[in-house]
Amino acid sequence: MSVTVEWFGQLRDAAQVGEEDLETEPAASVADVLRAIANARGAPLSGLLLRGGDIARTLFVSLDDEQVTDLDGTTVADGARLVVMTPISGG
Amino acid sequence: MTADDPRPLSDDERAVYAWQVTVPGFGEVGQQKLRDASVLISRVGGLGSVVAYELAAAGVGRLVLAHGGDIKKSDLNRQLLMTWDALGTSRIASVERRLRDLNPRLDLHCIAENVNDENVTDLVARADVVVDCAPLFEERFAMNRAAVQQGKPVVECAMYELQAQITTMIPGRTACLACLHPEIPPAWKREFPVFGAVSGAVACLGAMEAIKVIADLGTPLTDRLLTMDLRDMTTRTIRIARRVGCEACGGVGQ
Ligand SMILES: [Zn+2]
Image (cartoon, rainbow over all chains, first blue to last red):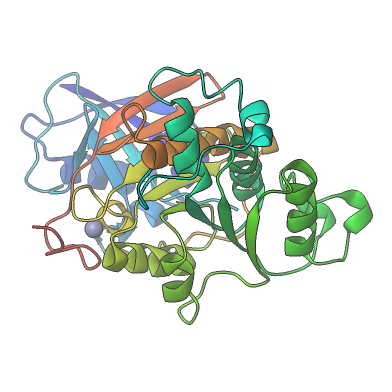
């Protein structure tokens, strides 16, 4: 099955693309998807997605336009759209 | 007229705000609310300059403005209250001068330093609404904590490259900044790529949110994060929620 991941903020720079489609295992969690991307792509993307092997707590993630706070306990369905953001600011 | 009745608009106020008091749901009562309101804008840079200018133009009575440092050339692509001829002089002095040129009726509280742990309680206490336009998460989290403690609504604006986001937070009811981002992001830097037209665009939305909250107009952007990518002009509205156990707002109003 396939999900679309949209990158926001510094993640967009690191991914070098605004969004991408990814093949995932059935019943994958949001955390599984992000971990798989981090492992497949490596730095610099993995440096923003992971912290000490875990998904970085600073990330803001939405699934089909709904904020996800439990990344491990939320599964993605075929055709789902994840938006993943590193925090941004004013200035 | 009772003691609680707001002072009627002056002839000057009626003339200046003629184009907005006719907005349905706003009227002279809404204008009186703006005049009697106080807004804290944390940093008056790319975002805050435009928020402050719009709120000064709209007739918000008091602006509490905090911004340290002197004007640098690299401010001038977006910090629209700074000018070339004032390079090297105080940013907040330039802000004060430009705002007074537009609206001499303003009650301005200009503080020549950024929000910090020492001044944040006092600065937030002077405001009815806070607009967060600061670049560093340390000062944003300090202001978030103070706003939650004092029950002050916060308009959160942010931008990066051609992207921007905004949400309006009501303590005890909606997510706070720490609900969205529970930790300071280690990779964030004070200097980042952005166009002034991007910060200005989200700043105008932020000013409108402050006006709506003060004047009880329309529906504020609560429980929703509006994101924009001006590279391809896509927008997205994401439902956001309070985070269980949030260090800043956990237990408040629940
Ligand atoms: Zn919170």
